[in-house]
Image (cartoon, rainbow, N blue to C red; front, side):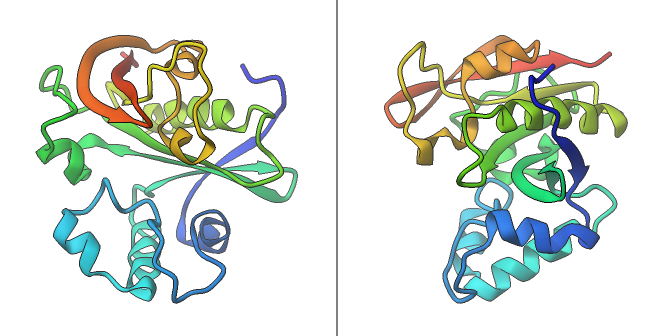
Length: 196
């Protein structure tokens, strides 16, 4: 368990303002990811305007299975984690760099975002543990992640959004496969945690 207690909540439509705090830009006309890059086909993703991205994220938060979870320190939102059935994520169902280990309908954890001023306090670890519980609560048979295998080398903050192998190992995940994906010159590995 994490050293600091953070409250983890699903990113539902009632919490969309908090999703926007973590994922959205200060200027609503700036195009940022909104955690859609892995979810949508690249052509569709590129075609969205900045405001359409926000609206797409809002619509995802209104679905029965929200697109991720949020971490709170008291009443302050401090982090985001994208977690959903892998089948909903275009990059992982159609891409060639992250393999399919088997036909199990796994859930995927693909993105962490920790608010500035709150890094280095265990927020990402708490989010990963919360993502596992969120997936378990929705009946997932297993959860996968695709972190960088950085050893003890430092990962650039902007490229750490996929997590690190050590972080996933700390949460009980084990390496299930190599990938051909790299990020910030680090190889990414497929980590899996069975839930049944």
